[in-house]
Image (cartoon, rainbow, N blue to C red; front, side, top):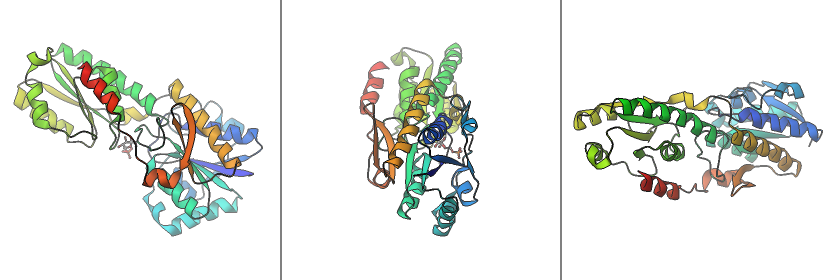
Length: 319
Ligand code: F6P
């Protein structure tokens, strides 16, 4: 294999740059040219593909976001659009593609692989919602970012005896919320993997003596409900001031923490080596501290992500 390409797609995540750098450096180490595709699948379709030299990835390890840019590009579901993308790659004699992104990005990689163009997926998302890996690139950095916010909100909500609802990203996955609730000492957690009983929450919040504290932190995953409206209902029903804070895109930015830099570096090296061994249509993960690879099609169609029930039990015992 002489030429490969790399792209980042979907929501950016801290550590994506470290992964791109690892792909470029590993390629260089083995005498493989590495091309960078700008703006994810959109740039692949529009032929925005350029050779990455060593200096292009210098000083990137510690930078948040993705210097290649990312985009959501639903038109990539159309076969003619994908055919154009494959033609653009083949015109440059590129033989394989590393895709760094979430499950939507894996769908594109799966489709290209099925069209005969081998792809390797690296899990890059703060949501930690990809099957076949214990951790995604960016998740633990985002957790630290969320915790900084939770700590600050605790200061002000305890000073004012308020109930603080903190809405945390994750799309439909509660991992970030649950970990933040445990590490941030929240009183309540609302996550998609567990039924949400608003009445029970309001009853519990309305009885501060039972919870032995006058303020409360409630961590809630986005898309569960309208968090602002929930805060208003809680305030009306309990008579205690309640405020909602939607953390939003703050959670996606910032320099990757050490763990994510190491993970991204390991996965980037592994992706290139898998391609060198002739693998395609695989996605990389880390499970029980070991790098692993799975069939990308299985990963997004049949593989399940186990819910972290142990961590949920831990949370329940600590409140
Ligand atoms: O997948 C990452 C993520 O940040 C999710 O947590 C969130 O639901 C979504 O992307 C937000 O997407 P956008 O940046 O397009 O608003």
